[in-house]
Image (cartoon, rainbow, N blue to C red; front, side, top):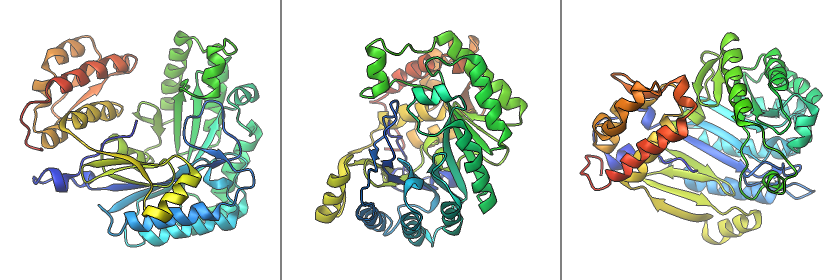
Length: 409
């Protein structure tokens, strides 16, 4: 799903909170060593490819998208793929190009994705010299057999040295990604991964339940009966373990899958979850601003050719209608523990959310799935376990309101 954004300048002349004009920049670099069996992001094996032709076109698209920028850029996220698979000189060239395009903006957070064993002293130095403040590392598991199931190339022994190298070179914030619900995983092995991650003293931990995405090798293995998915009850227990262990370690559970030490939330992802504007560049990257959403071509050669011939690489785009805006505000903001802001919803849709959701709100509150305060509607811990049901029912009411008048459109 590509998050929907809201452009306050185009769609509403009323005063808006500053956070609605904070814009994120996402740069997609699709190169990986190999394609992991569970991954459905656009990525391609590096296999000796020349990377400079793609990086040059990404820089060209970046120049076009930010001339001028639709909103002040406040966060940058360079993802993939594995950006740190690039040689140090190529990584420096890419990040210098990004930095040059955003030098007039007040950047609050600059994240680059990495995998264990793809970061050495030279690359870590490049990250810091180019202004990177945060590295998000795909650790995924500290159990060798689980990494094999996920088709990850690193071993558990690669994770700590990579984190130590980043710390030594001056990266100020580090996130570790972990996956639960892996076939063969137990609550005991999941606890080991959580505790091993905590020993490295990260600032942020993202814990994702494994999903079987269409078209991936892992899904094909499941469908062929060669992989048995984790039991749903066990997976629910793992999620509760996560909440309890990380809370005891001083982490705030601020989004369904994300936990942070105080002051270390991922500001870039918060822009998505709050339906803010964002610019995307690179193959398959998505962007959304000025009331319009787009997605680029998911092909390296096709992307390069499109940039050369047309100056852009959009594969599709669409205007955002009233129903889409409301539904995605529900889907994205209910992921946050802060919940769906009532003031934002009123301002951005022209509708009172309490009136709109009245047919189900009281019942969901009585069942202990939602809290309804003066400022927000939020999922409770029990509600998180049935979030799909809650969001489905609230989104259905948004569809029913499609023909109602609104102050925002």
